[in-house]
Image (tube, rainbow, N blue to C red; front, side, top):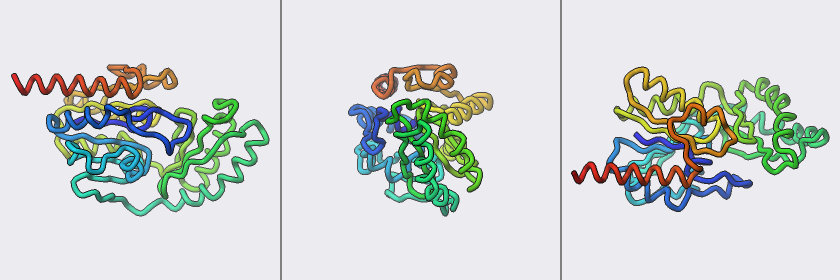
Length: 259
């Protein structure tokens, strides 16, 4: 099974998350791989329908069996029928989102200016500081207020590359990955990611290894997340490197099939 994060792995990190699009070679490489593996999945913190739209996955030739697990697995889109399936949203997300403008206004007066909210449907909300004059400083100043906000509404805070995301507890890429590996009966798994949210998926692959399922961990490297890089088996140079790895894997599997 091939499982991949979206932002920072298939698509470059950009100042405006709404402008993220996959590397031009991503879909062709995945389309070549898909017929030669048990399953291909994109596991992302974005809403599933947003990842599908930005990724251009719907109707993509060769990816008729692609699955997108959005909101860290809380949502599921299948190319086979184009439907998104999900449980009812956690009420704390909307409540927290309503309080965020006041929190960001207060933070702006103490060096937190430039932070902005990314609405992620009704299952999560994120605050980015990449546009701030001091992105890391703004992130640290917001960490306490956002942690308190999450606690008031029964949510968890997930840190990332200059972003803090509030989402329901117990939902992560590790759980989503493990459940899907078991569902499809994959005999081996490759997972590629780039951010702190991918650590749970790395942990899931490590656990699968201990249970006898071979796994390969790929870091779409940027130097921003050394925790991920230190645990990876392979480090590549961002989405372009991920695409080159996928293309090489497709070449190898094609050669094996021909032989």
